Image 1 (tube, one colour):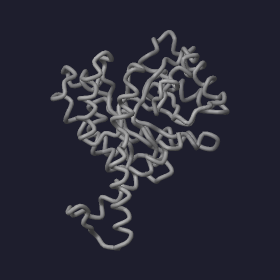
Image 2 (spheres, one colour):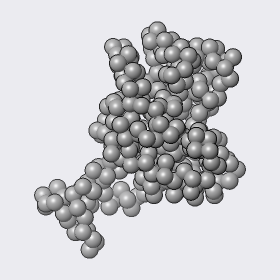
Image 3 (cartoon, one colour):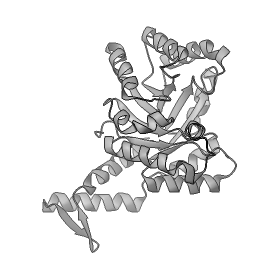
Length: 285
């Protein structure tokens, strides 16, 4: 990921696509990523109304610096094909799509091949939430240079695995998705913590996924956004340390430096540049 596509993706919130009036409220939560949902939040009889309402709202001016996108239905479904058809007919499409239940890199390439010209700016955020998707997650994460993040869909994954949503049951899947995202140089966003009244439990889980390499976490309630933003933000100490490390490498021009009696090798630089880029974006907002 180059510095142009690096931005804070600490938190994500959804709103149902058939209620476009909730767009401003979703943005007001302070979430970094705001997503109109045409998939799980919409009952089958309401899909057509939702897609029309969503693409109409996203074709209007959006006065926010937040990353706003649409979660479409799986391209392997009739509703997903209908979403894509209407998207292609929309003169002012959204800037990004969230692609659910992706099982192979070819699914991403279909969007890349078709969304060209006036639709060529559209970015992708890919959800891994099936056993097939998990098996192919490394290839999926690198299927297109328009992918900005990969998300772990724990609810569907647990159902696919025939287990409850426990940490032990999902840690393998989370780890594979985190590794795939890091390999591709893209952000990695975790499944929401469903008990929105238990903020302590959410913080504990968010800290755990952060240690695995996740860069953010989705939310089911506005009350979860501020704690997630705080937890996934670089601290003042981390920012200062990144500046010192970068300066030391640039000054010495070697493959390793010593900072505070600790040996630091050059591959660390990539993380330091990313951390500073995120901090700069946060300051702009």
